[in-house]
Image 1 (tube, one colour):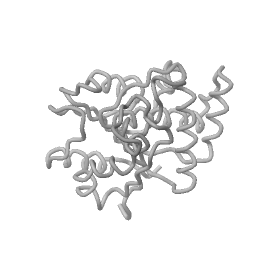
Image 2 (tube, helix red, strand yellow; image 1 turned 120 degrees about the vertical axis):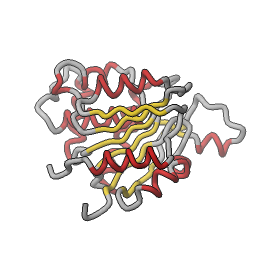
Image 3 (cartoon, helix red, strand yellow; image 1 turned 60 degrees about the horizontal axis):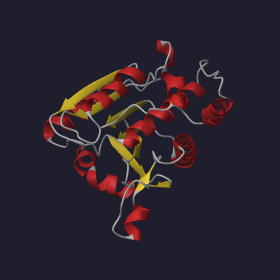
Image 4 (cartoon, one colour; image 1 turned 30 degrees about the horizontal axis):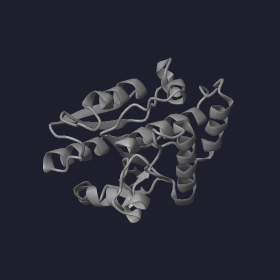
Length: 230
């Protein structure tokens, strides 16, 4: 590997780019020769969060809110990320946490559809969104922590059906046995139902990215095993 792999990092619900960066300290430091992470902040304020101050409210962000028009907000986030990918890319891969993992899955499914022949959908708005993403190269891999399968009919339309519809980029999925925010089964569903080449790891803890030496070694082994020549 001649250079660190540039990865787009998508935070979880109520986080922002800076808080996610801070919480990923052990991950970043252990992979600093391998990954070049770019942390961005979602365009929406997290409305299902009760902050103590207005400042906290503005800093708590979301890729979408369940209480709003979920797909409309998701589309806005897709377009926001697309602009980042055009302006600051190209990116080799994506790292996501919690809602950011779901957002990564939606983005990757849309981008794959834009680069394949399996992109004819009856939903005209979905088809138009797919075409918008054709000018960015596909992410070559993803590392998704505490993720979940987005319960959206548009996402179902992208990844359901034949095996060819599923996202084929290699992915590492990390779920926690005692995760009370995103139950382990939801992360398993994302790995098995939306991805073809998914490596699923389970840790004993809750809603966080494990950062001890044993898990950091697993992350490095996943990256070392990637075939990024194509």
